[in-house]
Structures are given as structure tokens and as C-alpha cells.
Length: 182
Image 1 (tube, rainbow, N blue to C red):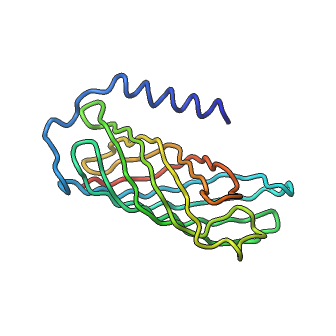
Image 2 (cartoon, rainbow, N blue to C red):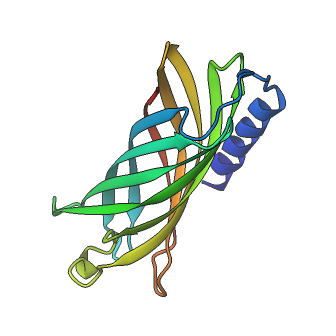
């Protein structure tokens, strides 16, 4: 897993190194609105050797601050299931800040974001009823590629960590989705 992270970071930095100034017109506060939706999946191996399948649907809305910075809200719906098909639903919601830059005349956008989320998500299914009002710090590295005028396909890796003492560690999972840039 460490090698995948290193390869991904190298890919992001190689795109940064060949980036060109794609947007020459200055953007001011709220000139642009971005709607982003993505789906991700990963498998967690718990202490009891049971694999837990985790699926999430991320929805974000952003307003531009300038050409590179955006502020927005993040809503994360999470479903888990284990070997016995026990299914639970969770959520996370919170503010998000995104830095983006452009390559290839704006057809490729690479970005990183950070967020602070409130929610009830836990990987430990036995603790599900006890885990409420949790805080999470998260972030993402990703790329958007223009399909047509304002529609982009997105991909990358998202990470998150529960902030409370006794949290389960760092989550790292891939995602794929779409962005609409208005």
C-alpha cells in the first residue's frame, strides 16, 4: 500500500511539473460553482480477521475564492457490510477547502483538498451504537479531466482519520466520479 501512495504522489507531482497556465482570466469570489460527486470502495481487515467492505458516496459543492482556491461543503454517505452481510449506514459532513491548478489549457485539473467532518462512521461494527458525534480530519489528491464543456471525470485517492482517542487509524481509498463546473 505504501508503494501505491508513493506512485500516486509522484504522478501528481509530475503533472504539476508540466502544468501550463490554462486559465488566464482572473476568477473572483463566487465566480465559479463546482458540484462534485464520487464513489469509492475499500476493504478493511479488522482485529477479528473479518473483512469489512466499505462503500462511500461523496458529494461536494464549492464556491471559488480565486483562480486556485475554493471553499465548500462535503457530505459523505458510507455503507459497510461484513462477511455475514450485516449492513450499516453512516454519514460525515463538514467544511472543505480545495486548492486546484490547471494543465493542458484547462482540460486537466489537479487538486488537493482538506476537510474537517462530523459524523457517526466507525469501522468497528460492534461499537456502532456507541460511536456518535465523531470528528474526522480528511483530505484528497485528485485529477479532473474535461469530457465536454463543463463536465469533468474525476479520480484520485481520499484519506481520513478519526480524531478521537482510540480511533481506528488512517483510511485511504480510491475514488472515481464526476464534476460539473458552472
